[in-house]
Length: 99
Image (tube, rainbow, N blue to C red; front, side, top):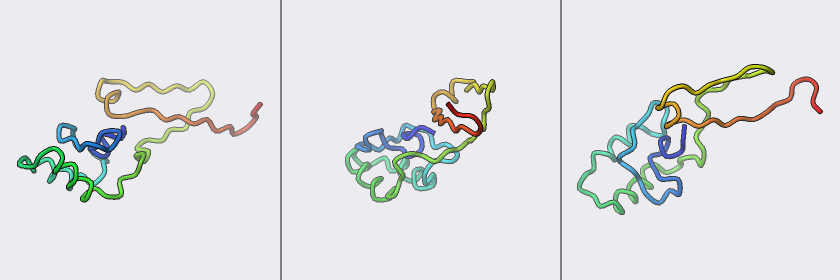
């Protein structure tokens, strides 16, 4: 999941965004729902409150889906929402013969 959808903050963590959807698997969804209902606060005050309540958000979201692909396998991210909310992080692990 992309950081902004996981945490509710912009990438640089300077602004809490109430316009982002709260997806399954995001960081402290119940706290984010409460923050999104606080309409009387200024943007600066809301961001300060969010930083207090969402303390400990990791710098990178945990993996939601892990797949082992072998030589000749491929994976396709199908659909606009999949492309919008999630990102592919690939790492190559050599199991047998490596150059």
